[in-house]
Amino acid sequence: MAFEETPEYDYMPDKNLNGISTFFQWPYVVLLAISATGFIMHVVSLVLLDNQHLGTWFSRLTAATLGSYLTAIVVDKSFRDQEQKEKERIKNIALQEFRSPLASHLHLLAKWYTASRSERPEEMPSSWKEFLQSDFPEIIENMDFSASAPAVKEQNWLTYSMDETQEFKENVNGISTKYRYSMDSDMTHSFQKLENSPLYGTILDMGQNIQDMKERSEPEHVEKETKKVGPFASVSVERHIDILCEIISYYEDDDAPETPVFENTSLHNSNFAPAIGSARFDDVPSWAEELRNRDDL
Image 1 (cartoon, rainbow, N blue to C red):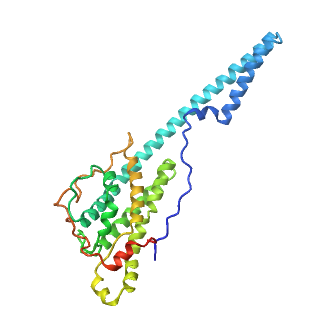
Image 2 (spheres, helix red, strand yellow; image 1 turned 90 degrees about the vertical axis):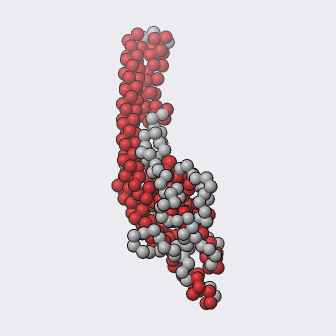
Image 3 (cartoon, one colour; image 1 turned 180 degrees about the horizontal axis):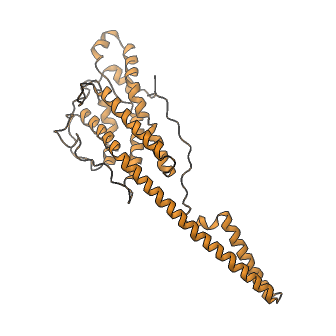
């Protein structure tokens, strides 16, 4: 069963109402129009009609409406500033709560990268963004998910990855549900996209897709290649990376918590499991090569 493409969510991005647009919202336009009209009538009353009493009345009307307009603007701005501060506070709480699950997931990706590389990189990336935007998608296409994973319970990489990504998805869902109505719409949309990342479906469908491919292979090769599991569909990986980078960018704001550190991963430290190339295809099976070229995963 191929993974269905994740639907796009319709959302309205937050508008900056603290700027000049605030001055021209409908209630304020009415007050401003009355004040302007009153001033014009004040001038007309004094200059053209020579009516001091009428001019005074329009002068008071102008002062009253202009004062109301300025007061409303100040109060409105104060409320909006307070609302923005509250959104920032909620955003930082959500990011802080999500920091540990995000770190665990990023370390899982680092393990995939380490296990599927042929050798340690000559130049180490300096951040998670740099790491994800490097040759990560191409390297993990060489991942053999039937190899033994660095887990306490003996299991292969596919089972281990399914458990880890399912736990991560549940954490994303928890954050998205808990803060959906208090985060700004852009961040809510980012978490919705991460919650529906095609990577999860790719991992769940990988075993079935590979089994289907093997069954259509030549019988004499099936038994020989049965132990091999992989590779990833690169499109789903690239989409997942884009979403992760979007989430990581929120940690780079001035008031936000720091993003999880990139150091002390399996990529950096040879004492950490897995070892370089420990789950890498030596010779890519014929069905795996065919699977790489499919565009429905």
